[in-house]
Length: 98
Ligand SMILES: [Zn+2]
Ligand SMILES: [Zn+2]
Image (cartoon, rainbow, N blue to C red; front, side, top):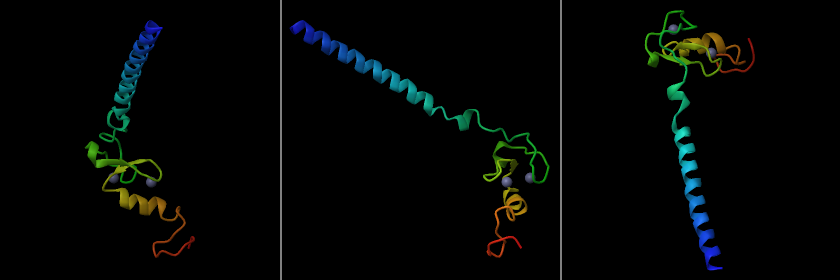
């Protein structure tokens, strides 16, 4: 009976460590942020708003509304040009088209 108890405890401890190792591996995998490693490359891409190329990764961004690649500096102009009417509001704040 005692040996059965000991082997159960040993099994439980071994299982606990196995589980912890697996969780640790999973956590490390999740920490490798896909946005950092395999995210969109803006450097060298063309801005869909002004059609000039984006030189630095930090200068580019994806439009939150339509996901096209634009300069960070162009995002405001792009939103006004592409999404002002599409969003169904006018710049004076009144709803509806025209
Ligand atoms: Zn641009
Ligand atoms: Zn857009």
